[in-house]
Length: 120
Image (cartoon, rainbow, N blue to C red; front, side, top):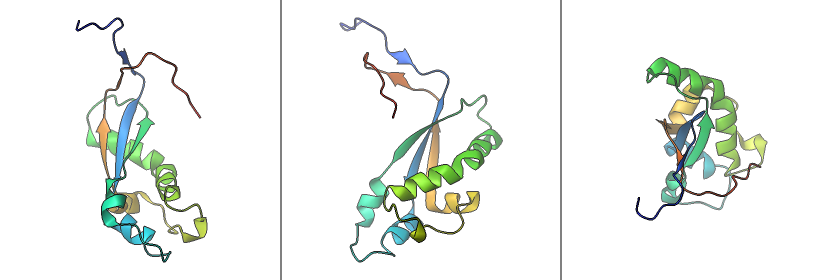
């Protein structure tokens, strides 16, 4: 097969959540500090999170995963721009998460490399 010696490895016990910022995050990032970051730069930032494996494609299952993880993901996203929690919004709720971020579930991931994955 095109010179491949080993097949790609399937990551089978996780689903993946791609999180992308929306305008409220841009406003927050540029609202507490004099140095401004371009909207384009902030909106281009994407983070991929491993989450529990999706059993179905039901919206209710996906919503449940978001609800269980939104606070820690929200905090992590905010920490990408500021480590000073006094600037963080008071409510890191599911409703705010949906206002501040768009997201997409990705059901499959294949590792094209054959070296060790480093977990930190």
